[in-house]
Length: 365
Picture 1: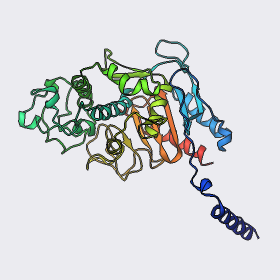
Picture 2: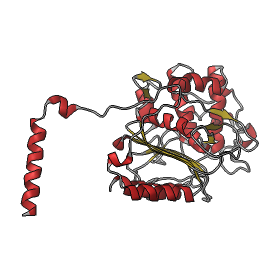
Picture 3: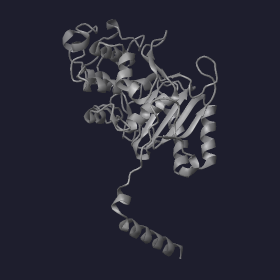
Picture 4: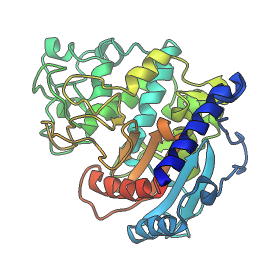
């Protein structure tokens, strides 16, 4: 009896779908974009998405217990969850106006800036790095240095020796030859850091000035690149700024009809496998749902995706201590997490997977 009823319901559903108007069958969800100025941002109640309240509470408790400062979930551009805990960098209660560092999640922002700089005619990512920095930017033989292109920096395949005392150093004496460019993948911060020098030299502008012009002024972001005693080129912003960047990426570089990164070819290359060594890496973005991944600190792939509990089509900007910007096209979702973590990994992938295990249980309820 139950089986017959279900079959009848299914048949009626199919008939209804087939008799719908063209407008009904082709209607797409309208994406919301917050105003470029001010703190106005439309919200959606989790219950309207049929998310279980107890699992929402469980997720929030997990985040609070794991030193989270900020957590935001967007669906269709609207805020579904926004929570803040603990103190900011100045010891004040964390809220929507508090700034926090992105750590290596800033790499993905830099990749987007590079793409816009190429679109603006300042950079060709297939050109030699020495075309912008001049000869001798490494401590390598010139013929080996000349093998390295901007794309090698974006894909972590420069071949520069990663066995260094300071992995963040990007002075010539820290860049020694290990193998030819393109022959090895390694998560080398120094070879990423020098991209900021390339941005400034190629555009003739300070990195913050160009980032403002290229992205921030167009989507309402107000963060900035800063140098600290420990790290250069550290991006700092509010969680909502990070959510704006995630929303821009979800919409493939388009903001409310305005092309911020208009080069579709570059965007697609940035968010798909960029080389044949680490299939889970694009241009400074992590790609989920692949058969293998080379994690930071390692040189060989393991048979796993980046985040097994997360959606296969998710792309992620991931940083130390759990700075996450997750973009999920299949769910029209952006997830932001800022804070600390006890994880000792360069990128806390296990914590990220545990977080997504709880999110997946929530949205699949």
